[in-house]
Amino acid sequence: MLDKTETKTFLDDLFDQGLLIETGVDGLYGRSGLFEAIGDGFQALVSRYGAADEAEVVRFPPAMARSIFEKSGYMKSFPQLAGTVHCFCGNPADHVSLLQTIEQGGDWTAGQKASEIVLTPAACYPLYPTAAKRGTLPAEGRLFDLLSYCFRHEPSQDPARQQFFRMREYVRMGTPDQVTEFRASWLERGQALIGELGLPFTVDVANDPFFGRTGKMLAINQRDQRLKFELLIAIESEEKPTACLSFNYHQDHFGKTFGLTSADGEVAHTACVGFGHERVILALLKHYGTNVKRWPASLRQTLGL
Amino acid sequence: MLDKTETKTFLDDLFDQGLLIETGVDGLYGRSGLFEAIGDGFQALVSRYGAADEAEVVRFPPAMARSIFEKSGYMKSFPQLAGTVHCFCGNPADHVSLLQTIEQGGDWTAGQKASEIVLTPAACYPLYPTAAKRGTLPAEGRLFDLLSYCFRHEPSQDPARQQFFRMREYVRMGTPDQVTEFRASWLERGQALIGELGLPFTVDVANDPFFGRTGKMLAINQRDQRLKFELLIAIESEEKPTACLSFNYHQDHFGKTFGLTSADGEVAHTACVGFGHERVILALLKHYGTNVKRWPASLRQTLGL
Image (cartoon, rainbow over all chains, first blue to last red; front, side, top):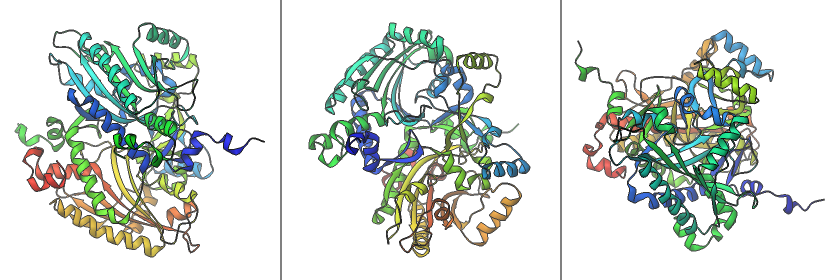
């Protein structure tokens, strides 16, 4: 028989301490006030590192228009992760039969119809078409500050792989020089920031879970062109550390797709840096322990705890 | 021909000022940093009014387990408002055909399968089963502080009727006396709070949009038993003011449904006060104008602006 303390997972520990709260679905958890306070401290730290750039703050709800989502190309790369929102559009007779189905434990969801709304897969997806609507970019380009809940359908008992999680992003739009310079500067800042939190990390090219056979080609292209770097921290596993920050160069993908133009008349390029809100909190809880009162005083001070 | 200034709606004005941002779907909007700052000020004010009670802070993502949602009875009352989350579960061949359908502008959503997740219709729905899991309530009952994005499928050009919006709630669980006293005290506090913001309001019994024929009975019962009061402020219309706060007594509905027991061994009663985050912000913008710099200095100070 295994010793109980040996089989207790990190997720169990988070539940026991009340930091995360079970909801009956893997990867869908409530958060305690303390968990949120750590997150607030982290967000304030990110804002401090980005303050000099004076990004424009925009906040989207955790969903976007299906028409824009379809255009974005997300279903080509990650169809298995997307979540569409469906609704009941029936009459009172349909309603009676729906309630009977629920009462009998049957599947009542087959009659649900797709709405115009899809859950946001990454904080920046709703931004590009709204930015394009404002017309040609100014000569200095634009910079946005985003934060939203995102959805990815990947049920897991790894607390660092949640279905609903928050992503903070800075998104740069402009010429290739402007956006690659932005990415390079955040690649430095991101490492300094995580270093200030005292967390051991590595930086590597990304390895996204593109779907199917064509997906393999997309993954090779992403690696070969060094389009995405990740800052990885060991959370659930030492061997497979978790991407906590990512640094993405989209080239002209979103510019072309949504008609975003630079001041020089060329298709705008875009880049973003993304911060996995829950992942950084979890990395801190893993590294320093789930008893936050025992965290180093200097760290607590950095996070305003 | 109508004068353009006469036909401009409040929503147009919010878009023009950049306070809300169009996404292509009615009732789904981005928010500017200023819009969010007003909301932060409002939330801090709510916290100040509730501080003495020392509520336990819990934050859920904008979704909940479908199994719990089914049990809650929401589909009996408001099936038309609910949103279920559906996903692609196919193989690579299905994926190829899905992409072809998207490319041809067809309906690719028919193949989406319901996941275990449903969007949260009101901030407190995910709370009851998790509270019940902690066992019998202590003698003094419990009090929770919640805030989350919620979804209601009611596309509208009234900015105060959004599909994705935030709801702050305090939720009380205990004996009938404990929870009715809680509701009575917030009925007072809520009026004082909105009074401090200088907004004209009325308080009335609620008039929820229950679905179908049985829904009419539920609505009559809700009114006759005075189970729900609303604090209403004129936003989109003077004649039909908008419910910005609500004060709900659920009797033993959630206690019975989710097995929540009071210290005296009886089924626990529950009550909640809900604050429509966006609605209060919009009420302020409607009443004081969309040029926030011109708001009274004392109001700006109250909101930390």
